[in-house]
Length: 54
Image (cartoon, rainbow, N blue to C red; front, side, top):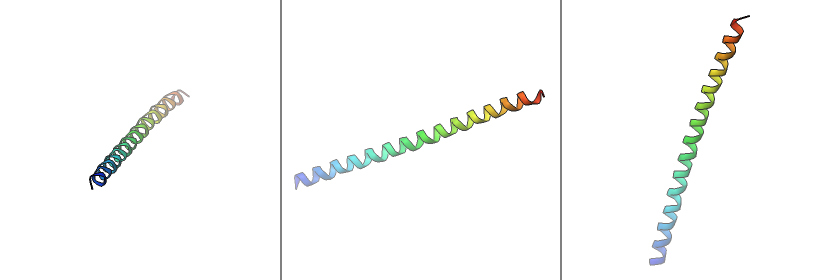
């Protein structure tokens, strides 16, 4: 019985660590997407400013 409870605790720890890794990856992807959108916006503004001269 003691081995079974240790196995359940280990499995729970693994599940919690997988959930935490998934949350971190999700937040990293969202942050990367946001930074990419800001970069695209800055490039678009630069292009518009350049094209206004002509």
